[in-house]
Length: 180
Image 1: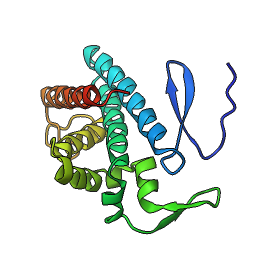
Image 2: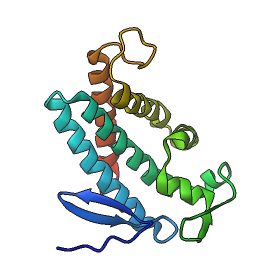
Image 3: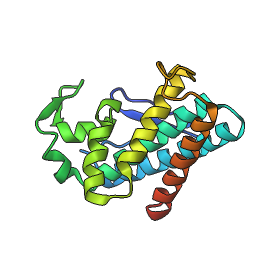
């Protein structure tokens, strides 16, 4: 199948096939569904990498899974999030969207903690704590272990494994309650 990829759109590669992920300002329900599917597949890959001892790869995939899940959870709370993320954002194609929708669409790492804090206040479920773990794993993906704890927060692979297991179980729990 030959897909024509359009510029300025987000694509998810699933089982060798590129799938266009709808933006929340176009169709929020489809966007949520797309991100849940992304979370599911990224978590499955993270689990495989963990089992194969590819810890940095597992950390990266677990982070991506949580990021997608956080974005999907955010869709239902756009009104609440818009109280904190005000204004507009100009897209590359010239279109202007609400800043909160832009954040939900991209879920930049720099905004994940803020979004998680807001959602955790609304929902509980340790969303903020899991987001902190995801960000630590993201740092580990790039920096690896550091016995001194200066460059990476992980000084032992055992701590990485514990956090990977904890985050992957949380993702599975969230996906079970809101299946793609």
